[in-house]
Image (cartoon, rainbow, N blue to C red; front, side, top):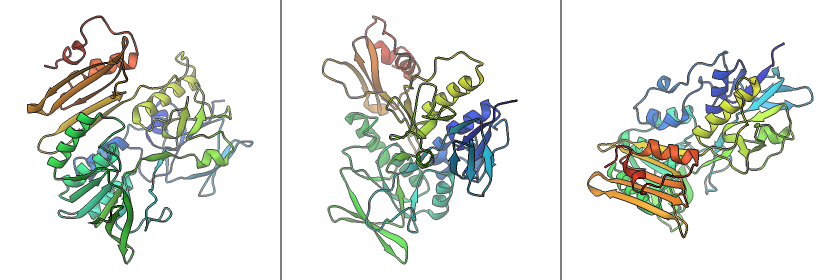
Length: 396
């Protein structure tokens, strides 16, 4: 008899498993699995929603089905509609929830009219329906998600203000110089950027947002507010089932939880102290688990992912960006930087000993393929001058 594999969650990791294996996939959203990375392009009108659909799974997905309880003794998943789904192996791919900041005027998960998270296709479609040319929009959060949302709203003709509590945009991925170039580009798109700026509250009238209050007393008029303050692993289902949970659902190198019949992959999983929250690691985890469950390809298990972040910002002058590893050097590290102000291009790598440990590229990604390969392989670099890292793959 074949093994019954049930996957909870139709995001990147869950959908990848459903493409590789015959599984019962329980998807909470009413939409077929889609590429979440491209949501900003749907919001901007560059793609229709159906364009970002992921490849068809091997078995039909049960859409609009929310798993509410796991009975580990009976090996069943109870769904909100009252149905029970039995499993031999269960995979949690429950993803993550948007972080809702502690603001005055924001209570619980119910958001005031005009206030939107930016995590799902429904979030994206609701925003697109609401925004018109001239709409005053405030994006809270200047990380990857916030920058993507701001440029998409600007493409729709909104008057956009981007607020970031930290010193610079995308501070987790970029160094100060790259972040300054990114800010210049975002401002060229018509976005007003405020860094070192803490939002303290929302003003409302008749249940709809009217303004954003800043901690310094300044007030930003707003008809639309986008919350892009990061994500948090979705672990409630696992915790209520008695599984070991840290920031995410704890898994070993075979992506097993504390219950040997239950695995976890993607944004909800915590492996060796890391929660990735990126598409690349989610896909790698799903592929490793598919191999482990079928025993088709010998594998040593999952040993972690060295994830590279890529982003394309549209506008009259599109900007490509890539970042990986540690962009800020430690004492004793070697650093190579190339800047081309005429093309708004910037390339930088950080080398520690004989290993590439990080880098940033803006505007010119010609070298990104070879850099990513050298970094992901974590192999000793050749004795050639370090400059070749930035120039030998077509860069000038």
